[in-house]
Length: 134
Image (cartoon, rainbow, N blue to C red; front, side, top):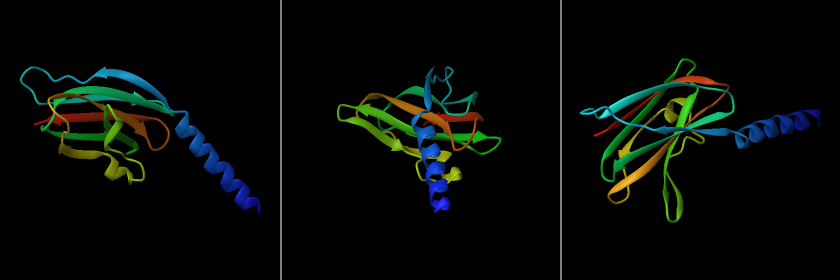
């Protein structure tokens, strides 16, 4: 009975930590003139998420990868639509290495704004986020 109570408390702590994540807007990802990729390196405290916006055209191929010294940094990608948030990549339930790389054709029509949200699977994380648009 004590084991069940202990597991319930531990589970509740993990769930409440995820719900209390503090999302910080980190601004827009921009490419230098003539370049099609860029890397952003930052540090993330425990319980924080960093959100980046990115302008791109529908139909373009986008590649996003993230690395961190403890391999605990992960990301989601989404865009807002009239029907709500459309997830392009959701790391929920993925193993850490599967949540650190995404490649795909961007949906929608014309110019769109996409969002990349960086988080951590445990503790804080120093990370390098690379975005490439082909």
